[in-house]
Length: 544
Image 1 (tube, rainbow, N blue to C red):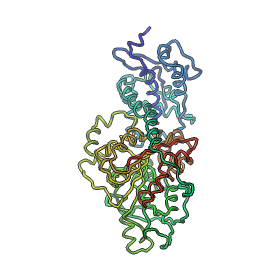
Image 2: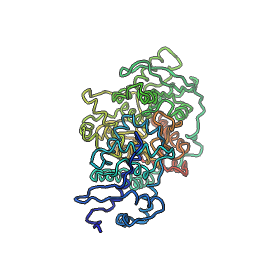
Image 3: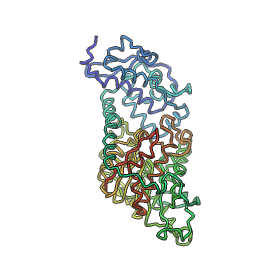
Image 4: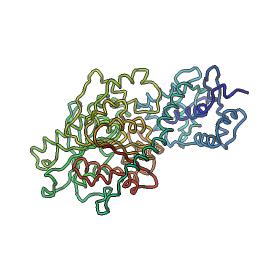
């Protein structure tokens, strides 16, 4: 019998079985049905090459049977871990064949698959991306979702070869990004409770409800020197009489959508803010959902890295356009262009941070995005996009800050390479950073929770929502977008999450654009606890 301890098959061993399936499921790609099927998973540990047979995993998945051949591995697991492994093998991701095929043609998807193929290799130690693609499409062909076990069964080669060193790197990332998350969240909750203030007075308005102002929505156009043609933007303009306007002006908020999204992603938030007296501007960026529809249909090129520069410029350009209109149109004359707030989600979060004064950190990007580093497998997909910034190094520096912006609210932003500590520390205005603990696109720990501590301005906040995902706050049917999302990535009922965002954003802008001191009581742990639902738990910490 093999000596398990000499093989080094400790807790890493059983997690590697999860790694093969986890990578296969996550990349969601494919090209053709598999003519063969894998018999075993192999990996080198020193001079040894243990093997895990697919048949043994099938038996475990079916009814919990532990075969004699699998017993040496099973003995390293507790009963709970064995049950977790069984559940994992049978866990179905609701993703269809068309979605997988579309994702194949997306440049980020191809790069992600290539990274996965470095971990999941062929038996001749070549990149396994093509085999993974075939296995995934074959597993999805029945229209009943994809399980990790099915991906292994459909792998079109006899052996699934794991790169042990890369797998351990992935496991280390998993430990940092996800396994250690509970300890980090516990620390944040403790800080939040220690900072807790009293509940807002009962006679204050409800920031989750619509305000008393009606609004008018119109679509206008602007121009950006980094883009071509006339670009649409939506304006939600409160219908306030001049006698009702406080300080003789209406504060402005610009909303920035993420990649493959669009101006409709946060309609509910735009309407909410407009009903409370804010003029809300929503520009269409160059990497919106229509761009991706055209790209996937083969009638347009993929988005260019220059969008990382044109996005912040969109904000300045749309404000310039409105300011010009205000010179001749009294309807816009009451807009306060010197008191602007910005909100952005995902890459829109990057956009508003850059426009608000966070400096692009080309030095850090270049150090971490060499050809070798770009190809390194990672559980942080946002690094793929962040490394695109290095393609613009020769054109740097870029002056993207707009002095008219006085407060920034950013949701699920990628920050670690785009800005790093050096870039984020340049922000000088009040900033709220919001993270979702179940975000596997822009993981909360490396991209928001750790970067929060790099902020140096007087007022900065961190809000963490459990177990929200990257897509929790978006509006519309995300299963039918430019890149359709499986339901597993959407998370719990978004309708129960939106009141948090409505309340937090309104309170934040009331406090830092209009100086309403009473808004502080809504930016507090007692208020968020009172707003609590069965699905979500929210923590807030603040430095000032």
